[in-house]
Length: 122
Image (tube, rainbow, N blue to C red):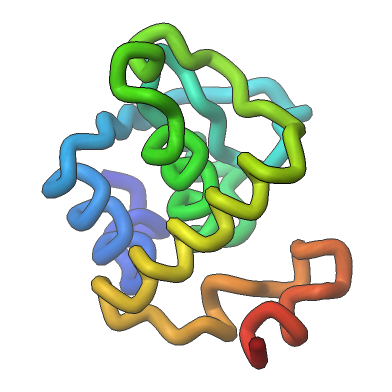
């Protein structure tokens, strides 16, 4: 496994996702993905370690998979921009971070359009 993914917290996040049944594959992604270095394909995550900027983004994208109806997950190749689903993915990622023991300040980083600190505090 690439060094970035061997390091904590990425390794802890990947182990958690695999433990709960969210498939994770390592592969190359296009330069432009919504979150750098991670994409949803076929109801699982594809991670490009060369482009992954924030390992905690894995939890956020997994949150979109987790809040999708089970019968629709296998065909999920993109996440919705629906505000309700986005809120659900954020809430799920926070619950997952608590389960892993990941600090909210790591989960809600500067990539949250400048709102990461406020999310972590709240």
